[in-house]
Amino acid sequence: MESGTQFRLTPAQSAFCAEVRTLAETDLAPLAAAGAPGHVNRPLLAAMGRHGLLARLFPGGPDGRAEAAALDLCLLRESLAQVSTEAETALALQGLGTYPVVQNGTEEQIAHWLPKVVAGEAVAAFALSEPGSGSDAASLSLTATPTTSLTTSLTTSLTTSPTADGSGEGWTLSGEKIWISNAPEADFYTVFARTTPDAGARGVTAFLVPADRPGLGGEHLDMISPHPIGRVTFDNVPVTRADLLGEVDQGFRVAMRTLDLFRPSVGAFAVGMAQAALDASIVHAGQREAFGGVLKDLQAVSHSLAEMATRIEAARLLVYSAAEAYDSGEKRIAGRSAMAKLFATETAQFVVDAAVQIHGAVALQHGHLLEHLYREVRAPRIYEGASEVQRTIIGRELYRG
Image (cartoon, rainbow, N blue to C red; front, side):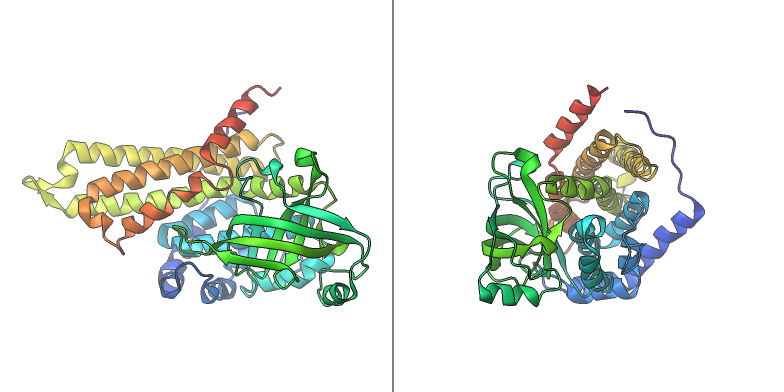
């Protein structure tokens, strides 16, 4: 892996970050606070649509396939996370669930769904994980069974969907997905199913499945999360070739292409949370009187703040460097993206924990910023590839070429 160059934001990029933070403080954070925990916050999504944040996520416009620059995605997520993790997560999940359509969908799929996503009117979900297949995504078992004909009732229902061709040729999906963000409230799902048994990653196909398909069900899971996470069940759910995202048996590439784009920005999300925790700690340590002075004058506290700040800056540079590598078209980015996600998410865990320690018991009160961050910071070390998976990727890359 080649080393990255030193990175510095341009004045325009810095101004954009400040603009996003201000917007989050004045408009998005109040909407996030008013939402029901564990449910999709549709007013929040609509506001992000009105303010053009979702359009920034999809720069090709409602009809285009253009990807966001990975660095722009990182700046957007980091800036939102410093103010509102709910707003950040809502935006990121729209991107994660929709980018397989942008990158691999048909013109009809894009024309129907992308304008609604950009406007904040349709909720997307990325359905990859299963009860027996989390980090080892290539071992998924949701079955796509070929069918040469569909019953009259199913064909009728399919022809009413803009993502089906009504030809009667396709598959039925059977099984379940679990730990799916935005489930079961999403309007459509990017679903990865096994079309060829015993073929590992080479036997997986991606489908766009609208939430109103017959046989599709789901339930909420009680998780430590402000947004919905649920189980999605497939009871012979019919899909046709018009629902394909990409080619048959090439769905693992569809998933990895989206994850390659989003993995550095998970690190950016973590950096944003860590920065919020550090900012709060700097204020608290500068005001809290103890032992005849203020906390910041105690060497133990000042050294802790210095360590937090140093790790955050290192994580930020790793994230920006990985994003820049993606945007410049470097071919071997897996290792750098893995380093960025690994170091940034582990750093955020360290920083938030240290911030709680500096604040003391007040940080554990419900409603305190750090109590919120302490709950939020744990999940990014697991999703989109756990820390152990990132270390495996990095180790493998060290011996390539």
